[in-house]
Amino acid sequence: MMLTKDEARNLKRFAADIRIQCMEQFKAVGVGHVGGSMSVCDLMACLYGKLMRIDPAEPRMERRDRIVVSKGHAGPAMYAALALKGFFEVEELKTLNRLGTRLPSHTDRRRTPGVDMTTGSLGQGFSSGLGIAYACKLKGIDNYTYIILGDGELGEGQVWECALFAAAKGLSRVMVFVDANGYQLDGATDEVLPLGDVRRKFEEFGWEALDVKDGNDVEAICGAVEMAKQDTARPKLLVLHTVKGLGCPAAFAAGLPTNHNMPVSAEAADRAIALLLQEKEAIL
Image (cartoon, rainbow, N blue to C red; front, side):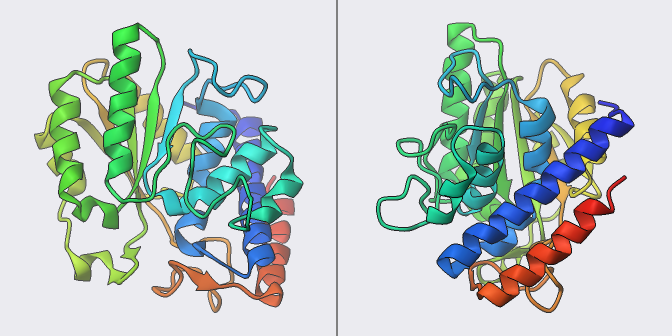
């Protein structure tokens, strides 16, 4: 969808706020999944700021759009978006992964308002998301189910069973985003298990699939979503080519292969937050 200048500016600023609140969470606990959380903040801004039908006052509204963060370690980005949208107080973000928190390291639907599915075991969130989407279809609920996968997660065989299932069952109101940031826990995805042409593979499985060259550009993301939704018969997949750890100083985390789960000192977090605030103020 074509964004107005104001919409684009607001989504970019929202993404910056999500990144800032991610860093506040990591600062509070001293460690976290920095890389894969920061790479999806622009997507989270688009989903929570523009694309999804949600209501913070009624998190379980039946006709809401659903979202499943299958790469559950990106929970901090989801939590930041939820808090900024009013699902709970922003101050609660500083309880990330602490005893008694409602914000565990990986997403948990039993604890956090706005979380539709517990995830963490890679690949399983895809299956659960399709189950949710199939149930909504059988109930006649006119909504979308959005699912976020990591590129390393595509090495799970379960992912390809899901690809077959969604097309076979005609789950045309499923939209999957692959956070293709190029790295996973053990190193570069191309070195651990090369994926080849993900878009083409999903097309062969019966999906409408698109590549988004700059998966950290809110206008590119929203435009690709609009294009994909023109296909009303097939499930949709968007491969977002992102930068792992985007928003952090390069010497600290951005683009580094060691930023999957890493220590975060108060000083490093403060430097990243200061940089993000400067970048936010520069958004016109």
